[in-house]
Length: 227
Image (cartoon, rainbow, N blue to C red; front, side):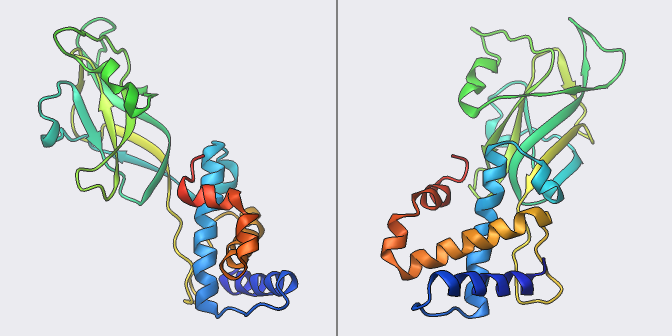
């Protein structure tokens, strides 16, 4: 479905459910459609159902970087995706191990994803000598708070080269719909009707307070899309 078709479908559905309400200009419709596509993508992310959003999956080979701000942490590194990151799918590290399960050369291993709250369990210090056969990774926020980074924890026996040593598969933010005739919705076709329906729901809430009371699910997704 093209952007023009999505706008047309929005207006048709909105007119059916809101006969006495005001209409919306195309630019206003685009605002609702862009909000709706993020909501619908995050629904799929929360279910870890990648099939319907395959066009947003990115797979990159990145180079690890020792964070200066966290120089007091041993055996910690990080990467940043080149696209607007939304959600983690999987990752691999190219590592060299010196002892206890040593490697002959640098090898690719699958990482174990953890939450940031679990990270202290895997940090190396005087009271906690960890052995991590494979690294642990978690999502973190940059120092400026403007983008997401992937933090990587490993043990004293593991070495990263710092060059093309991390493979990250993730969901990126979809391109915003616009009046530009060349820019159409890039999310899989199967999601388009759901996006239009959610956009209509958002528009109904703006005009009719009673509809707002009946749309708690959309409210929750707008505040916390991963719930």
